[in-house]
Amino acid sequence: MSVKKCLFPVAGLGTRFLPVTKEIAKEMLPLVNRPIISYGVEEAIASGCEEIIMITGRAKRSIENYFDRSFELEDLLEKRGKKELHDMIIAISNLAEILYIRQREPLGLGHAVLCGEPVCKGEYFGVILPDDVFIHHEPVLSQLIKVHERLGGSVVALEQVEVENVSRYGIVAGKETEPGIFRIDDMIEKPALSDAPSNYAIMGRYVLSPNVFEILHKQGTGAGGEIQLTDALRTLAKSEPVWGVVYKGRRFDCGTQKGWLSANVQLALENPELRNVVLEAVNGR
Ligand code: G1P
Image (cartoon, rainbow, N blue to C red; front, top):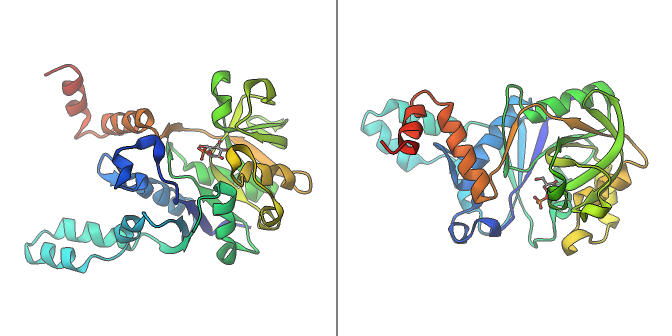
């Protein structure tokens, strides 16, 4: 029953972070000393996944290069006796087995997930939206996998958001069957406040049933003219369980300048070597 594959939709153009994303993949922006994408990949591995599937696009070659070997650099570091750095960059390329599938057109998150069908069909799989970075004791994907292993079915991560923000997320409705766990029976992608069935929003972690592919094949466009994953999960919930889990941890939306900046400050404050750098900079010393 465990989840061994994890899909990362990374084809998005990062328009919320222009102009820097004109030339740099948003997933490659640094969070302290590692790119944003690395946090998601490390979370998937810590949650027991063995295969990473990146659904990528034409401007994202730097992600492939980051996780690949870099013989020239390895050679140089070795010759200069920089063993620690040498071992560190080799460890990055050994992190996981990573496959890349091109999403040729930006048709939405549901379409990105459908691009993963050739690799994920027939088994439950994880999805990580790498913009959503979590600081946690237990990886959020692992929290979801545990619920899947106990109750079966698909699972999404939930967070209660301010009502004025419901139109930015997929919003769910359902029955709380045990503290923090909902059996979802309805969900709407980016609803107007007046249409929102609750203020529980889906955050970027999922465990999905392979039956979602058949639904996505037949599904038309939804909010924003895109093929929405939320619409497919709404259909799925009519025939098999879809659980919502209020995750434990703190989330940063690193697809926005504010969220990214906030995550950098928070991660630096938690790093003993950097904590004072932040405090001194803020206090003007
Ligand atoms: C996507 C999903 C949405 C979810 C959100 C979480 O939206 O479509 O349901 O609430 O991620 O970050 P996006 O942020 O890609 O517009």
